[in-house]
Length: 555
Image (cartoon, rainbow, N blue to C red; front, side, top):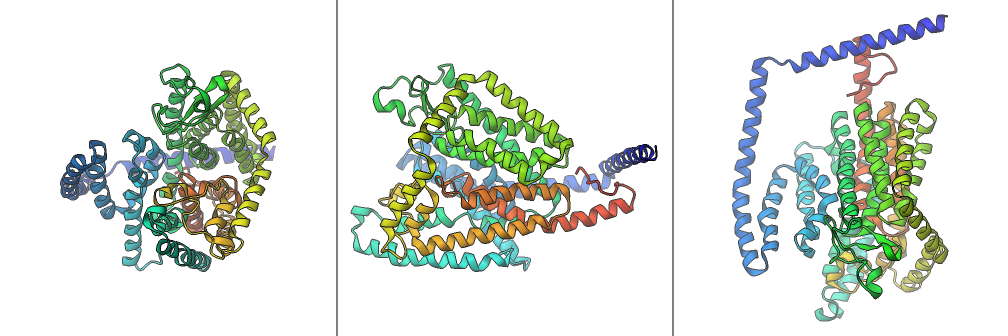
């Protein structure tokens, strides 16, 4: 009996606290008229300032766009009309620029090919990123804050930069001097772009650290990927249905080798090049991205990001949204035709459940796990033939060329190539996006690719850097006491661990993993600071009788 009474008392206490919190929220909403007017005045002033900042850059952008339209084409004119205002406004509003960068990135492939697929457009997203990075750096300088948030990363990062600089100095520059421009275009520019692809998004660690200032901003930051995943999943499903119903031809009407090759001419609704030859049992969809394998890694990355919201968000409504997003990721992993997504998405979710300990929390796991199970069962009911074809395709591919044999072959081949080259073959020499400036080698596994470009020592330096990241992020998330924050840290850390040491293909070289990885590192490093503030706040709420000890506010 005493246990029953204590439970009833606790239940009544929780209800009372909830009512008090609801009253507090209502009070906060009912602001005095003076305060409302002050807010409205502030917003009107901000709008006027934004318009004043926009108009000159827009005028200059239209001028540049007109010149590009005459000299090149009307589609390229968009670069001037849109690009100039974006760069100008991003410099003035760096925080908004970073938000725009993260939102635009999953749709960049769709925009690029909608405007003709020009190579310059591939770098358009950096119109948000680079000014945003500069703005955050300047803000830190003005506020006398250390931009390099965690000093433990500085030494391994400096070592990596030194060896990459040595590769550029002793490989790319001599190649530029020894070879005529016509034969290899520009090894110098090849090295610059190769370095940008390899190292360019590392500063996101520190940008994100300063960008997220409190728990409220953190939750907006962690919820955004679920919203983007839902939007991208819906667009990709529409693409699949348009191909299934014949609204888009795909590649099934072609002959010979064209039946088995991705084609930009077959582009459908969103994204870039695709392969749609169901009569031959081959389907590779790009979703909203440039190429199918980038879409596959978007789904793999979002297995972690949507899982984080589904299981760790303190607000029930957002947990439901996270489940919907995760279900969308599962469905697209099935219909996209990407074997790696079909295999890794469920494995990544299972890993998160085990490592983060959510599988032991039956109260939270059963409803969410049940919803995911229903989504999987529905996928089997709606797409039985598709799933069977994908599984058969994966088994056939594995039997023909097991992943471990493929990776081993790549290591052996690259080891022979760089045996006598201390600094590798040069930055950008295995970077596909840099091929416009010179000859590049197709190396389809990550660590052999790094070794090919920067040699044994450069590879060791990169491994040292990511190993340091993995260790300090592990220590950071293990120090957190607030349940939801600890859950976010644990989920992100599993992704960091997975990407740091996986070598199959090269997701750290392209979107979206090339962005997500460094963003998650910065987020995890910021969590202990947010946790301290949250623990202090929770103690104050408990002392005021607005929170039950052991509970966490829903925010």
